[in-house]
Amino acid sequence: MKLNISTRSLHAFLALQECKHFTHAAERCFMSQSAFSVMIQKLEVAVGAKLFERDTRNVTLTAEGELFAEVARSLVSDIESAFADMSDYVARRKGRVAIAALPSLAANGLPAVIAEYKRAYPGITVQLFDALSDQCLAMLRQGKVDIALTAPGSGLIEFDTKTLCSDPFYLVCRQDHALAGKRRIRISDLSGCELIHLARSTSVRQHVELLLRGIPVMNSGLEVEHLATVAGLIESGLGVSIVPELTLFQFRHMDLVSIPIDAHDIVRPILIVKKKERSLSIAAQGMSELIEKRLHNIGSRAAKR
Image (cartoon, rainbow, N blue to C red; front, side, top):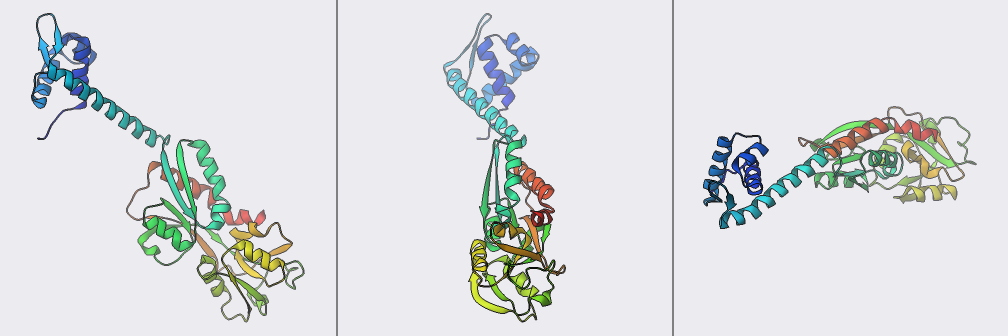
């Protein structure tokens, strides 16, 4: 059976239960008495039972009316609670935002954005997953995150993407290396260098291989996944490495030198990625806007620190 009971009719019922007088209850509901009476009658028809006993002096609930009063109060409470929750979500007093980001961004730049967002909207839960590019996209595809901050890779065609910033490359070496005194490095300067590589599963590796195409570098045989490992290997004199600007913070506390490479045509784009044809929640949209505002030139800032 399809019911057509409005929230207004529930409020009218509860007003009449409390006032026990049609005129007073109608005034509370800002209705004429005749219109109010018709609404109560229609409610009784919809429920299929008489809800009130009426005489010249008193209006009292029937046994069925007593039962319906519990239902009406519960329904009104649930509806008001649902709308209050919705208002909180719209006003960003409640909600959840989940972000997947490359480790370099998750550690450098993004934490400050999250902190600013949390100060503005302390009731919103922010989740951060630091992962490699393919993992970031997989989490976005599965609906585990709202936004991914990643580098170009396979499978991007199914998403909406926007370039957040460009991440140029640097040579990292020891201070006693032959190239350590240079202000900038030409690609040809890398000839003969013994390279420590990041793993092929990283977004960095494909760009480095493109950068070094045709350059006779030496392979150290060392291929690792973590930048802290790269830093330790370089510090021990086992070779040099080529890394993006956003990762330079990993090398600051060691006796190492980072030098920009003159290869403006080969940079690692950092993308903000979302699902196609699906709007972000209000909370996630606010985070996306803040990320774009604060991180659009993060690479250039990272190099100065």
